[in-house]
Image 1 (tube, rainbow, N blue to C red):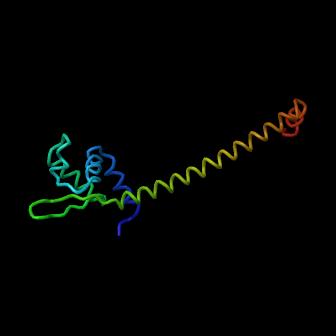
Image 2: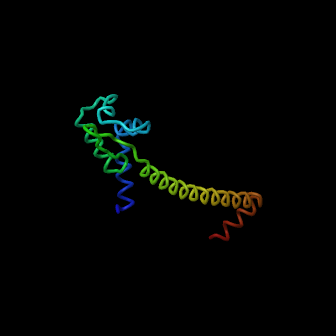
Image 3: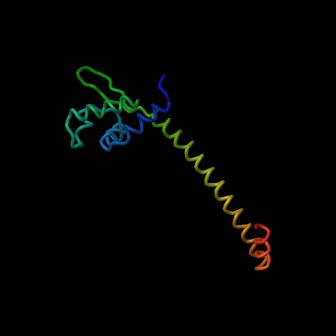
Amino acid sequence: MQDPSRALDLVFGALADPSRRAMLERLSQGPATAGELAEPLTISRPAVSQHLKVLEAAGLVVRTRQAQWRTCTLRTEPLDEVSAWLERQRTAWQQSFDALEDRLRERQRERDTRASRGPRGRHEEGKAER
């Protein structure tokens, strides 16, 4: 079994290239041959083959042989894993932002309380802090 962190790295690496993303978009419509995947792209057939190897290594594509044809099929499980990871990150960041917002509100209430005491209250606080 592959290290989950390594698996994420492979998927993000595969998604980093626009040609590979275009291939995945095409495969989302159904299986296709390497030639069909190459048609809309302005890259060589060897480059298409290299891109497919990257997609296979990331687990996003499976190639099967049927007679003389090699068909590529999209696998969505790695994308589900990326989606779950992103959701965990979003939740953690949201909790951090919520905590920061709470702290900023608390600080604002403290300032408002000090300001409502008037200039004399602030002057006396300054003496107490020294």
